[in-house]
Amino acid sequence: MWNRKNAVILALVVLLAGIAVYQNWAAADRETALPTDTAPKPNYLAPTLSLTGLDGSSYEVGGARDKVLLVNFWASWCGPCEVEAPDIKRLADKYKADLDVYAINVTQQDRMDNVKSFVKFHQFDFPVLLDSDGTAADIYRIKGLPTTFLVNSNGVITDVFNLLNPDELEKRIKDLIQKKNAEK
Image (cartoon, rainbow, N blue to C red; front, side):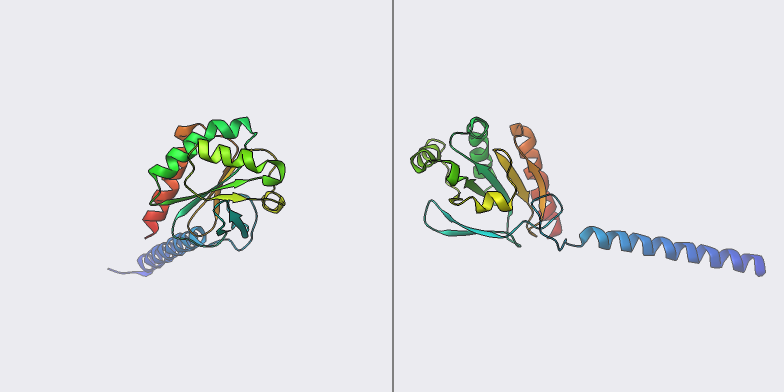
């Protein structure tokens, strides 16, 4: 039969279950909340900027978009940029349905004829943006080249790196695309 002891135990179990459900709900809410601050580092919204591409079109970085975005700061005279260019091209082609690539040339520190030769040689068919006055490099606090930012479809930077081996770069891109697709 029910007595006072059983009623207290039942009340305690219900209370503990309620606390567990609340904590789980609160943790899930924190994980899905978007950041509100902008900074060129992981877990912050990507700083907004608008640049003109080699094709004369204007391109926007920052904000929500349909695809994952890889933003790569580079220069034609940069040896490591030369090394990673074929991998970026290959991954841009392979994941074009889910990945946008913006190659931002630090044009202030480069020569336009060298930029065009580099793009032609590596057959870049994704937007090559020109940072002719260095503003984008300043906003993104570029200290060395290459510097790459991975940005999710919500406009949040998820990763920043200088040079990765091709397999690791592809893994990070695939993981980001899978997370985006899981949100659908």
